[in-house]
Amino acid sequence: MSLAVAIQMDPLESIDIDGDSTFVLALEAQRRGHGLYHYGPEQLSYRQGRVVARARPFEVRREKGDHFTAGAAETIDLATIDVVLMRQDPPFNLAYISATHLLDRVHPDTLVVNDPRAVRNAPEKLFVTHFAELMPPTLISYDIEEIRAFRAEQGDVIVKPLYGNGGAGIFLVKEDDPNLASLIETFRSFLAEPLMIQRYLPEIRRGDKRIILVDGKAAGAVNRVPAAHETRANLHVGGRAEQATLTRREHEICEAIGPVLQENGLVFVGIDVIGDYLTEINVTSPTGLQEIDRFDGVSLETQIWDAIESRRARGHDGRRLPI
Image 1 (cartoon, rainbow, N blue to C red):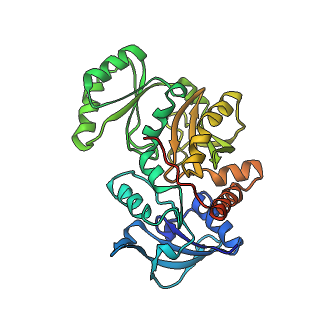
Image 2: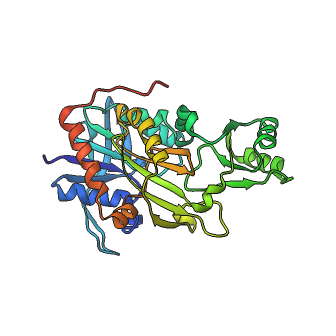
């Protein structure tokens, strides 16, 4: 089938063609004969009952410095589009939430991946709390006394913004560090949101594994090992990517969460596992496809498009997260 596909994402000019997952999704869509449109979330509008976007038709190619060609912008009614990929990067803020509300107006007649209502109900660090038995000891709170008590109970802890992304604002706070209260005060001076505090997992030195699930099934993994001077394993802050396979425990985690992802239209999901613990479920704009493709000689973007086309062909049952 030939589909009209609109990709809601960051500017085409900023794509890293060697690492960007959206880039290989666009390449695979193009290989299948699908027509591509690009627009940013700021070009998304509601107009008298219709959801429209000022979008450019475009093509991509794996040529550094010349990786895309785009036509003139035109206003398209998203009800006339077959598939919308919601792929702009977080932060998961009111602008992001507003975009999910607008896209919810056209879904599921226009298939939005991932399901916008499920995305709205599943911010990465909150969605994971539906699987508390798989998580490390965790506290989500504004309250400094609760945070102090949690650290006294758990020892070394990781403190991070609840709606942060990309490893920004993550701190390891030792059990005897006198700066805990000052750190919390600093966060509260510019963040109107709770913090997530988790027991520090020393297994992070061996890596933070990113596992990709496609329509609820584990499809591949890459291990991200932090640099010697870091507690964060994110690749853009110096983490090193390593080939990885899934352990028995990681298969158990995927089997526990997979049916919920599948039932709620979360087609492309990346989870993070440290040691035996699930730490995040990334549903907004997961990454990792190109690293896994290179290590394992696979094409995860092919699996994702197979799942999208299958959903498009059979329709969408509209079941939603029980949140």
